[in-house]
Length: 199
Image (cartoon, rainbow, N blue to C red; front, side):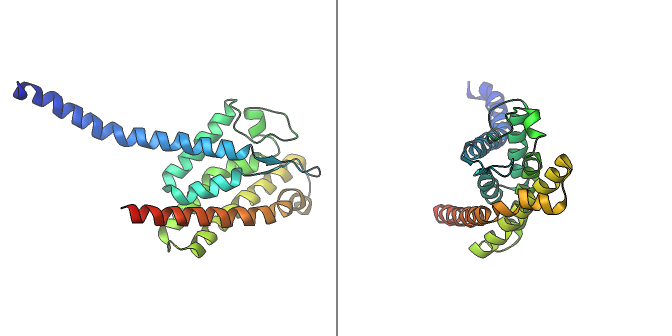
């Protein structure tokens, strides 16, 4: 009877070996996009700009340090797809638009930069030292990418000068982003140390 079941057991083992990593990756992508969505709803609107302060960027920086480049980009692409389909994952703001209209609104540049920023952070983090200072440098560069894309997008959308775009889309967020960069680096380095001890 065991000999009769051997081919089926081998097939099940092969199936599990092939599907298990895919399911794990899908679970990580969904959990990561949920983290970004939750953080994006921690919002402080600013009266002088259509862009609110949000913890969404923190989640992007943190995931960039935790995940592989491909998985980080896939997670943030999934987040954007969820928002484009109308799920309430984007930060609420002055522009009461949902779905694709929100993605193409004043905060679109920041949002569209998320996958590239997370991928860049992950790529750099894995090619340098695993210390706090290197994590700070990687997340600071990722934050700069997000802010730059946000400013360029807002300038193109509203036809304002580069200086005005920087005043509306970059300068008000520098102190908060400095805290997010430091927090993401600290949490990720601490998590990395715990994971290494557990192995």
